Length: 294
Image 1 (cartoon, rainbow, N blue to C red):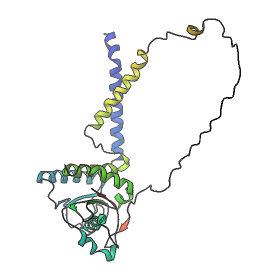
Image 2: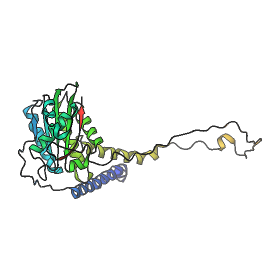
Image 3: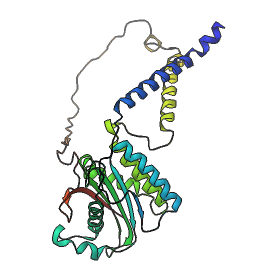
């Protein structure tokens, strides 16, 4: 019985460590949890999925609504997804008097800002915390399909231009083949980034299980690695014998000189922080955001 326990003691240790780590993570997660209360009672609609381009099935739209509702409760921000399949050239240019000259990639920006403001979205207040994705499937005169991520309030404060670009590039990578999957990924990415305390939600199902398995494997490897090393079979006497080593001739001879130059790169101070793409909408309200073309 004693030998049996000794053989499996490493597994008992691993299980104990994982249990302690799991309990600790649970306590830490609960300590970071924020109970958000929606305060905006003036929003024009409770709808979050506007699939005007008809790129998703009714079942997929409902799944996306449920995912968004859960994410909004977790992060205290509105999340809206809009799909279109029409030119926005005339629409956007009609607002140039208030927003300035716009290029094709900015047509979706004008639409997104106006859509957010007109519906008074915002979790905490009208025009408050939230994000809106407009994905227009129409190919404009520049030959490209354009999308825009509109950020407001805390989301605007959080997202830099680089973060917006990464989010759109990742989420929309497979949008042509799987629109629902792309928009679902967008919601997951926003939820992960806006989770209070910086505790990111796993984007891959079972990610925590994989992590725990990796930890267990590492512990097992470290425990057994030293025991499996081969015995030391050679020493210095193997090659030089047991006597003293004598230096017959010792000289310093200069052969050549080599000089190597290396440029040390300095970190740029630009770019960090949120507020990416900050600008004013046609109604004069502050938004951030960035676009994506395909």
